[in-house]
Amino acid sequence: MNDRLDILNIWVDPVNMDQALARVKQFIEQGERPHSIFAVNPEKEFSIPKDPVLYEIFKTADLLIPDGIGIVCAARILHGVRLSRVPGADLMVKICELAAAENYRIFIYGANEEVNQAASQALVRRYPGLNIVGRSNGFVKDENMPELIAKINASRAQILFLALGSPKQEKWFATYKDQLSSVRVCQGIGGTLDTIAGKVKRAPQLWQRCGAEWLYRLLKEPKRLKRQNVLPVFAAVVIFAKLIKLQAQTILNLMESDKVHR
Image (tube, rainbow, N blue to C red):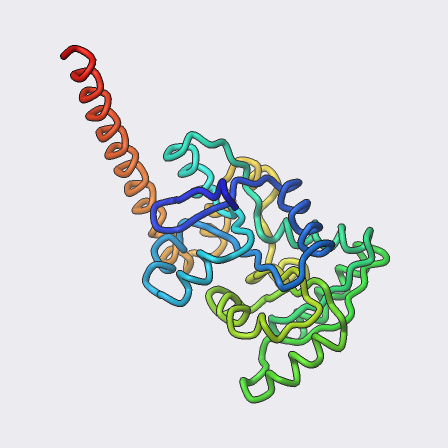
């Protein structure tokens, strides 16, 4: 995307939910290869740059959605761009709704067998006409991966959901994308199948609308504190970067003013 935003060391595309869905439809209707959709949040600001392979995967992704409220705030502070969150879990079910309406074929890969099966069944009940043409749990050994790829290709799936967790799902896509013959959209959905299957409860809508879903999850799962302690660091780095940017602009303005008065 030409308007992709730099957020310190990573990127995000300035899309809302409707725009993201329009991009998905474009990929399916006009694409000639698998197109990747990955979520961006503050945690990845610190993990992605440490891994050159992962860094390149995200840099070349086809759509990077503003999954975390921290990324939304950072885009406003650093670029003056108003974004709305596009949670990966919400985009996934919206894609399923679109797929049911347009008769797109879906393959679901990831999570354990119980969750994968329960989530697939729940999605079919929720969206009548949804065409899930294949599925597989996430415990496929490397030596059995050619068999899985053959199964995905034989299904002629246009949409592939990867529920392997990050960064495993992103690296899986980078490794096997060129072997996928019919897939046109591949979204990394992390633990979304757990919520669809009812194993994990998402934050109530009020918490989501307030951008506090991260806090709800932290209160429900205190063990997430180790992962989320990067949030205040991220906020501080964003503010510092903004101050540096303002200082640089002030210096430029003074230099221009000095030229005018000479």
